[in-house]
Image (spheres, helix red, strand yellow):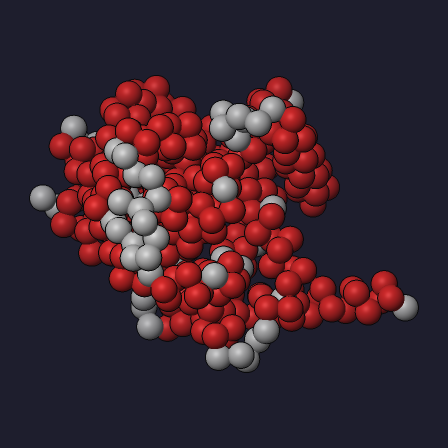
Length: 121
Length: 230
C-alpha cells in the first residue's frame, strides 16, 4: 500500500514537471520567443512556486532526482561529438584559446562586484 | 529489431553513467568529469562493436527529450534561495549580466576573427551555461547542440580546475562572490567546485548558474547576429 501511494505520488510529480515543461515549449513556440522552451518552463515553475500554486514539497522527489542525475541526460548529445572529430582536429587550439580567454575575462568582471553587509571586496 | 538495439543502447548509456559516477566519486578530480567519462565510454563501445551512429539516434532522442523537464527543475533551488537573491539583487544581476555578456562576446568575436564558420561561432556563445540550456540556445540560434555541449564541458572543466586560483589571483575573497562567479561562468561543474569551498559558495553558484541560463539565452539572439554579420 505504501509503495502504491509512493508510486502514485512520483507519477503525479513527474506529470506536473512534464506539464510545466510542455507549457514552456508551447509558450516559446506560440510567441516565437528566441529563448529555449525549457528556460521559459523554468521561469514558469519559479512563478508557480512564488505564487504558491505549487509547493516545493509537491515536486520534491522528482526534482531532486532529476537535478541529481542531470549529467546523464546530456551524455547522448556529447556522444554525438564522435561525428565532429575533424573540427577538433583542425581548430582545437584556436577553440581552446577562445574558451580560455573568455573564461578569464568573465572572472575579471566579478572583481568589480561588491555585496553590501558582507565585508567582501 | 531496431527496438531491441535502442533499448540495449539506452542500457549501455545508463551503465556507462553509473560506472563513471562511481569513478568520479572515488577520484575527486575535475578531470574525472562524469559526462566526459560516460561519453568516452559510450563512444568506445560504439566504435568497438562497429555500431553506426544512426543506430544510437533513437535512444539519444529519447534521453535528450528529458533534458527540458530537467532544466525546468532548476527553478526549485533558485526559489529555495530567493531570500539571498533578493538581498543582493542588484549586484548579483549586474555581475551575472556583465560576465555572461562579456564572456559570450569575447569567445564569439575571437572565433569570428580567426574565420570560423557560423555554426561554431554561435555554439561558442552559450559555452558558460548549463548543458541542456546551451544545447537549446545553440539550436534556436543556428548553432550546433553537440558542439555547444562540447564547449560547455571544456569551459566547466577549465573553470573547475583553475577558477578558484583565478579568483584568488584577482583578490576576490568574498565567499558569496566566489560562488556566484564559479556558477555563472562554469555552470554545474563550477557549482560542484564552489561546494567544495563551502555551503555559501555552493548556494551562490547555483543561483549564478540558473541566472546565467536565463541571461545568456536572452542575450545570444541579440549578440550572435551582430558578431556573425560583422
